[in-house]
Image 1: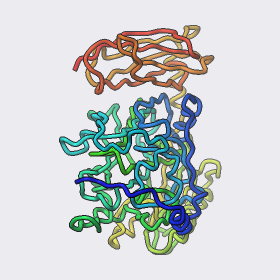
Image 2: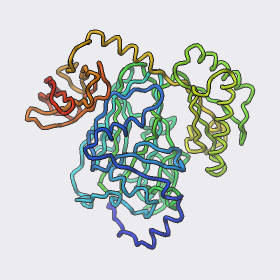
Image 3: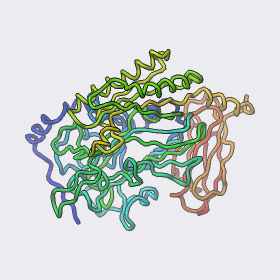
Length: 500
C-alpha cells in the first residue's frame, strides 16, 4: 500500500480550519536549544513529580533538533497543562490546529530528504520488537532517563497522537512508540505503554475509531480511549489522539530504574506521530485509593469516609510524602462541565482530609474531567468506575538522601572520578558508578568506540556517589571507552567490553 501526500493547503482553508478549533494560541511548543544542556536538563526535570529523583538523561536518537521540546496548553484540552513532547517529525507546526488530514512531514521545519519514502530505516531494537517482522522503523526519537522512586509504585501520564489517523488504521503504517523500564524486580525490559487493563501496546491500530475511507471499513478498537481531531476541535495538528493515559508499575523503593522513551514511524517516514508526557506526572507513591461517586454527584458517600479516615491515620504515622488527589468523571456531558465536576469531587475529598488535621501544604490537587478514563466508558459499569477521585500517598526524598549520604562517607575529600562498571564484560547492559563533587556544574559520561567516535553522551545530574545505566543492545562486540567530562574538561576514563 502506497501513501500519497496532498499539496500544501491554501491560506483560505488554513484560516477557516483554525477558527473551528479551540484558540490555537492556547497551545504552544518550545524547542530546546541545540547546545543547551541546561535547557535540556530543565525539560526532563519538568517531568519529575513527588517522590522521584532524576539521576541522569541521554538523548540517544532524534530525527531532527526539533523532534522534542516543551509544550504548554493553557486550556488543558488534553488533560495536561504542560510537559514534554517528542515526535517522529518536528514540533514547530504542531500548534497550528488541524489544518489538513493529509499533513505529514510538513510538521517538520527541516524537510530535507523526508519526501523519499524509500529512505533507509533507523534501527531501534526495542521498537522493532513491538511491530511485525520485516517492517522497518523511521525517524526514531529515543530518550533515556535514570530515575529513583522513593515508594513502591511508579506512575506517569501521556497522550499519543498521529497523522496516521484515520486513513491508515489497520494498515502496516502503524506508527509505534514504547515506554520501556528495566531494573530490580522487572524481568528484562517491560513496555509500559499498553491499553488499560490489557497487554496490547498503544498504537494507531489498537486505539482508534475505525477506518472509514480507502479500502474496506475497519471496526473501532478501544474507542473509549480515542479522541478524533478530524474536525479541528483541538489546537494541535494530529488527526487523532488517545485520551490521557496513565502508566503504573510496581517498583522497589530507592533502587535505580532505567526508562526508555521511544517513538518511530513504521513502514515509511511520512505522516508523523508524537507523544506528549505530562509535566510533574512522574510520581512514586506508597498506596492508591479510589473514592467513587454517583452520577453527577460530588458528595462523599459515608462508606468511603471510613476508607479516607483510615488513610489519614496511616499518613499521620509517617507524614513525609504529600497526598496527591485527582478528580475524574465519566464521558457524559461536555468537557468543561466534566472538568468542573472533577474539581468539585477533588475539592470535596481534599477538604474532608484537611478537616481531619492534615495541612493544606501537604495536599496536591488535580482535576482531569473525562480526559483520563481508566475503564471503558462504553458501558455503565465502566462509567461508574470512572466517576472517581484517586488518592495517592507520594514517596518522600528524605530517606533516599539519608541513604545516599551514608554511602558517601568513604569519599570525603575525594576528587570526582569514575569508580567502576559492572558487569564488565557485559552483554545487554552495564552500570557505571561515579563520584561527583558538589562544586561540579556540568558532569557527562561520554561513550566512544576505540576510534574516538562519540556514540552517546549521558548527563549526570546527581552529585556525590551516583550511577548511570549503559544499554549495550545496539552496540557491536568490541571495546569501548567511558570518559568522565567535568565542566568541559576530561577527568577520568574506563574501558568496557561488549560481548553479545
